[in-house]
Image (cartoon, rainbow, N blue to C red):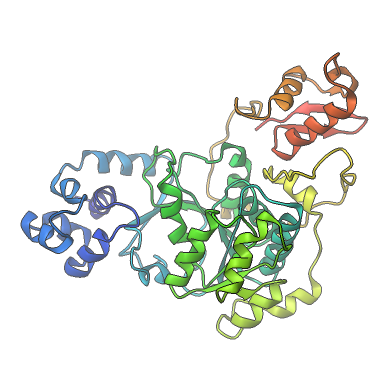
Length: 421
């Protein structure tokens, strides 16, 4: 029997972020040994009231075999706890994942400097600009930026790192074949060209309210440092910050505007001992001596990138309340993407038919109304989208929302078309 089968079985049996796996691996040392262990002994180790007991007593390997077949068919990598490439940093935490499914190119987890960038989905322009700028500079200096690929700060941070030609790692709270949020499908495909998307959840699993907090321990656990850019006091980024402190990682926070709701979390963290982060240099100076992969001198020759152009280029969903038709005109400068990665270095991703990127049904109603007026197969003028209920100013405002979320493409001559994937 393939040893991988037992690791997949064990990952299905142990609740993510729970203590079961840590206790069992310490006692038995391997997945097959745990599978073959006597039930009463296992129960005495993990506790007779442990909710994972029933799953561990079920010795069927059918589901594990199906998952392994899926991964081999679709070229999904699996990194188990016993693999030498498994991140040492994750072995140090109290509740390490049994295994990690991944797509893309694995970075050297055990020698490079990893820094996580987190924050709210409902970001401000202040948080957006700083998340992009600092992530761009960190990647320029050689850091690997880790985040959750969510709407808002996560996506902006990853776009900043990609625009610098850097490596990124996205840790998602769903199966490797379930892109969440769906708006970031294009972003995910860009990430795997120079880094990877990874998850501890089995293929096919959809995200839920428990999966995101659990995956946050992996985001912070992979990273020597975590930066919180902004968020309300009860933001989900607080969970990542708590994990970072518990795991002994360095925690940074971006100082915000006093009185702003999105500055509540960072102000709280700064009051409780987080280091202030106003630039990439604040982080780099603390770690450049420990990680040879970081080169602070690269910052002297860094190339700038137009943030809005990069967000549009990577189809990042990061709309701020202040975005409207009075936003600065789009820059025609190309996004700096560093060295070109040869096709042979990129994990093979199957081509998909050209289909329009559709907004979800719960998207802004006004924007959906405008979107449905755009022809399926050809561009149209802005004036053609105006009707008796919507003036040109409102049409342009709705088009901006659609463009920022990656559903349309603005063309020269005040023309617009649907975006395809």
